[in-house]
Image (tube, rainbow, N blue to C red; front, top):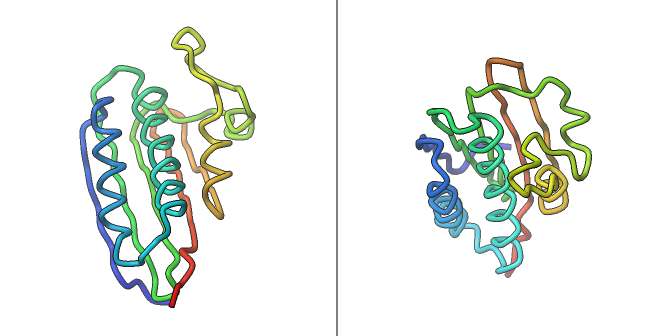
Length: 144
């Protein structure tokens, strides 16, 4: 499996950059000729991961979010969303539906569940005080 295309994008952890990340991953994915559903699923998962980094990782503090994405000759997309924020002490607990560290902000606590449901795989690595990396993969079906 060899990487066919790759990109890295760093942006400030600001709420308005969530839409920017969605558009960037859309443009990056277009050469694979995704269906509207595949494109929407990837955009939604990226949106959730970026929002988590901004809201929970940095909690209003300044920081940078990195989106690293690549796809292979087999049309498998991998997206890493990386922050150097506060990290997650208990990843298993954070991945439980309805869990949120910002209950007063009317957050649903469904971010990881949504990412999992729209992507083929989801991995979360985190070190408290050093940040979090969310890695998501999705196979884009080849069409004639």
